[in-house]
Length: 193
Image (cartoon, rainbow, N blue to C red; front, side, top):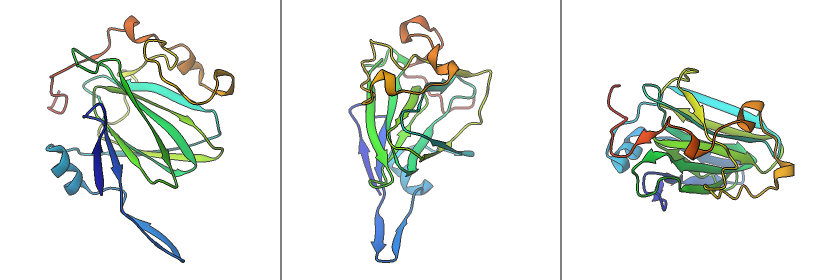
């Protein structure tokens, strides 16, 4: 596996080795020891999630507060998405900045989004299957979000606003500057809360 630090160094792109021939392919999509050796800390994934969406569906920007903050390891099984992670750690040198990466069944790339980041994606092809691991269970009480179209974030979602399909919840999320429910840069959110 190849681990690539992005312009926000805590967000990691993972390029797994793909072994293929005329019969198909084999890929190792997760290996705790190599990931943890690269990161220098342990992640205990406890839940796998999967969604299927049509082109234009935008999910996000979502995050969970402590004690249910989550690290996500995301990938696409079929189709493609533009995947986005936004730094929401107050005091961070990259606060409010984002990383956007295309993940697809063809490139097999994955993205690791640590605690302290909001996450979202827009689906670029019909019948896209998106899968991800999390290291904390879903908690409705800790669930939060930020407006996908916050002008201060300047995210280019590739598709026009008219092509986007959002849930009622995602249409009414606050701007980043309107929320106090954020993380603090330098705090170790991987310790027991």
